[in-house]
Length: 209
Length: 186
Image (cartoon, rainbow over the protein chains, first blue to last red):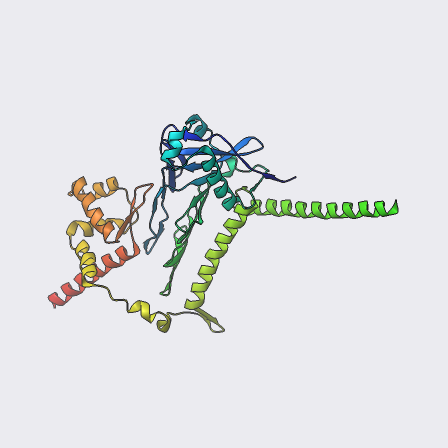
């Protein structure tokens, strides 16, 4: 059978120090000490985590063109629960079991409450609660992050090496080395090694080579 | 007995059909993987990325439709004034105009913009080029330019980049000055 149900660990952990979950030349995602952590497992192997606490996302969603830079960087405090797929071994080394006080500080009465919240998030992201069983979420297959936004929908970040896809409420940013696509409420920009197409919403079309 | 056999045959056929379906999915995924970005995180995420790309393509298509006319004579790129008149008429307060203009009104800030016209730079690179300005003054000038929207700083790498409005404002300031100088000479 190809499809399997994921499982959430029943033991909630917490970060014993600040951890950098993902870092490239384009972005950084960090969580602070005491952030709650719950592993997502598939066939008893860790395939990801659900976090809740304090996190910070920095993303350089700025496109350089001959006409000037377009877009603004993303700088977000993450206080809502979020999900990460793609295991990094180091995380496990910086975790300890969370106690009742840790859970209360993040707004949970019990471990079960956090597990339920994590399940809701996973179901929202993974649909019927199933993940692909073949070579998924491995080190070589990049990372996927899903953040709950103000509209209770998910902002998604998919990253693998220099490849990056970020989709939030008002922005889509796709980048791979020198190729970048940015779609914001005011413009659509595509660049490839200095060549660019800029479409300002309702204004003009600029093509530069 | 023959009824049982028929039933079994039917089940086998269904099983074969299901297996064929799964095989087709696997082949499709392999083909996609060989074509470019592919992060194997399950169909749902893969579909999601495809949806995102479709959204971007639709956005581009929608905007191009408004701006470009492709006819038998060739391609015409135009701006539909009727459609966007409202946007053109948005009033900009003098306060805002003054803020942008005042950010340009300093020799050092113009020097910074001039340096950034050739590409993004780190603060130490700017410092090297504008050695007459101290680091703290340079930072405060960059803050003024950033607040006015003429410059943007990358959060990860930390480079400063001149924005589209920044480039336009810098060119405009130079053009106006050149025009006035020419007139004064006459």
